[in-house]
Length: 262
Length: 256
Image (tube, rainbow over all chains, first blue to last red; front, side, top):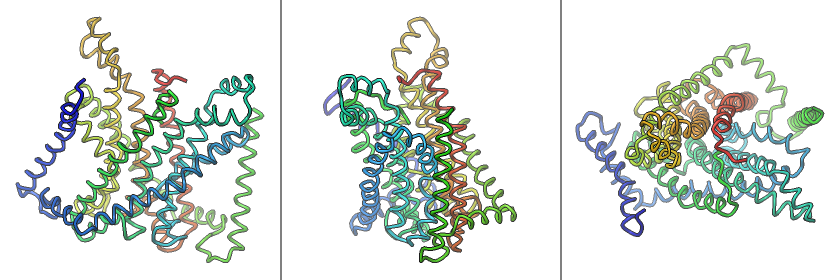
């Protein structure tokens, strides 16, 4: 293993090389004039459009709206879902009843809520947050519930025979045991949430990256669409690298459990 | 067995209570009818759409598209992922690109596809197949690369050929990831399909509920949502999850 800045540089280079190749191929295709520029503008045009949008602040506004919506929905849904998931998971009579119900709403997550959201809340922030809430809440709730239920009873018995109280069992056995599932749930909810957000923004609002690219499509501004797509991709990679991977690593290290890929 | 009945009877109770509260709310709340139609309206929307023959067509259209995407994922996506994964060089090269493309959902490409392919069937199919294909390829590649090198070395020292290693080590080792990729890809794909049908507006369940919104046919929206959820439950519980659990159990990749 190579370490230090040379290793880092090599890794970055290796990661960037395929994208450089795609960029070159893209430039060559547009140079060959086989496609009208409306179909595929040259990369230089897209870069210029992106730069202009960064300078006049319009790209930042839309990034802010999208990221803001994701954050607001996460802050509202995740604590509620984890709390309720643990609450229901602890009740052995309730949890098998609620698991399939949560499973059903999970399978409904995302964009299918849009028509109802628009009927109830009109176009705007509230509709988008409502869609995001339903997507995130049920995924995290379901995974928390399953996580609490899948902690082996033997651990609970062990703590109880050692004189542990109910509080000990909840905070030192069940919640830590459910943690990998909870984290998986949050991770999945961000993935599904982002996708639902982009689709919802196309229809239900007039801000955000989803709206940006959909609106550009109406005016055949292909360069703006490509700027939006690349921005969405970069934002996701950043979320994954800076938020999701550290959280997952932390839970795996802390509880010594391999994250099951669910 | 007794517990089983307890669960079922609790469900019936919850369902009855929900329907009662919903009916009561629809009858007494001071909101327009389209805001909260009673459960009976959803039922009559169901009967009406069946009688008119629209519902079977919409369901069939949506199912046809997702099944097509599933087949393409299985028979094109998985082999591509495996081929890319077998060689270290191609895997290193493809990994960042696949990661980027699988993270940009098909729905984000939809505006571009609308320009390229117009408002029609082709755009829906490209968006859905894109959404399914990339997670499948990515996870197949990841599966191959996550097989511990020590197994490969063990077989190699015993004189196994390259083909033996692929067949007996890499492929079985990658199966849990492949199953997971197919399940995740289809889950994303199903949602992308609903969204694409809304935006392109031709037919299918997504179109049905979106179109119903413009005419304030809220009972029809609720009916459509119920069907979309139920179809996915059937697909996931009876097809995808057993597949995933079978591969995980078969190759003992989970320590529980």
